[in-house]
Image (cartoon, rainbow, N blue to C red; front, top):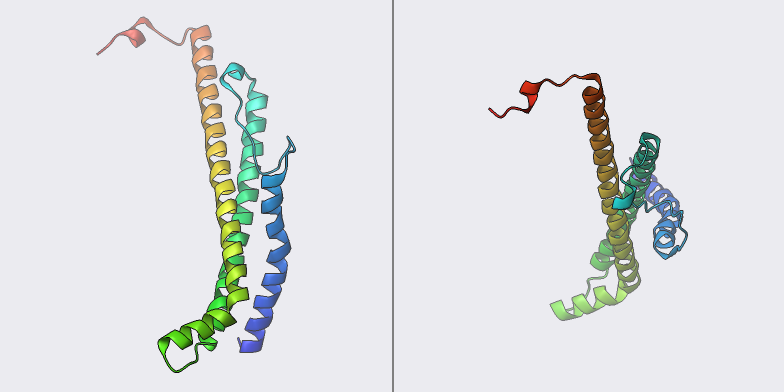
Length: 171
């Protein structure tokens, strides 16, 4: 690819990612109970939920995890673009007679890019925190479902007489 194609691709990617990153901020600032980035596992007093309810929680937490991972990836991509912009401007403006002058010139010229990069890095941290909490909720919901299935199988075996007295003897 030539340089103009790469620059156009970078510009298109940046234009695409920018508006989506506002969703991360909106997720944290939303007070809506039905926030699409956060799902809470039921408390201990709802342990006797039906299998349909547990399956619904597993599906919702999986969807939230997928959504959160997508936006964390977008945030990381936007950060890489802004980091590249900063490095390009910083290195291009490193001019002067000595190290102090070169550093001052580069920092002054890349101030806007640095601010954008730091802001985006903060958004990356927020997005990754959403992703981690969604992953934990999803894994926990799946474990609840596994435990419920094990309990149902044990209850079925007990009702049908699948156990024998030797099953309860220690070795």
